[in-house]
Figure: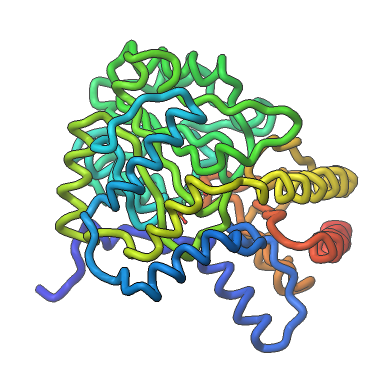
Length: 388
Ligand SMILES: *Cc1c(COP(=O)(O)O)cnc(C)c1O
């Protein structure tokens, strides 16, 4: 009688958040922990965004807004897609949610149900399969390795499609691998989805975090038949460093947007009113912080990538996006959970085991942390690997 539902019983809590919490706890105890676990930029939210939210709060902008967001914010999101992606959306197709994660959840709940299969390339963002399960759908994992820069091919996608397949999830630039699909690769995967009439969830949260001249191109930009089956998930967490604000958004075909609006109106209602005012400032204001952040991220990325590949036993792809590196640890003979537990215990370095992302031969290192921390952490990592 008083047991939890089958729907949640099988759910595993987020391992990335757990590792982060453990590292923070050790730090609070006075231990000299180096954290590579962070899934958020180490920069502060730009001042003009904070000012806009503070002014809204001071002016008493503290009441309910429409559940899918302020009309002005939905318009600002639609303008962003027009300006940066050349995509036309009506504000009614834009749903503002409590974080990009919430937008992903809404998308999966609005498109999938019991018996449906959801195609998820691995390494994947750890919440996707759990969300599919919450929708009582079946996650179907498409395995990739560093040999193909963690990219699925159209043939691999096609081979996994069954009459039950409902949704394909693409996250480029990727968390956890940092890998970026080229425009041609995106289009080729999209063509398979068009051919088989699948929904596509395009998680574009790292859209602006690109290096080495890599280009991001969203699936929906390849034509109306692509846009008609694509739901774009995006948000302010990463490129504006607003993780704690809980603001994300979706651009979706009208029926899906309507369903998400209804769901939201019965669950969370609107994202925080004054945070939305900050969101408007973020989307309509200057972006001069971003080149500075990107230059800093890039410096760290190149430094860490070279260092990692100089450690005998580790091998790391040159990720072109986000702020993660995903080295292969298989030559050490350890699996990822064991590797990370021992690394934290022996050297007080926090990294996330790849198994959390469906890839047990890898670990995830975030370089969204200061250069001095990265240097110290990699020295310790090297000592650890050499001691094995
Ligand atoms: C960070 C992240 C999101 C969104 O995070 P929120 O904090 O909920 O906005 C979505 N997808 C991926 C892959 C992410 O890494």
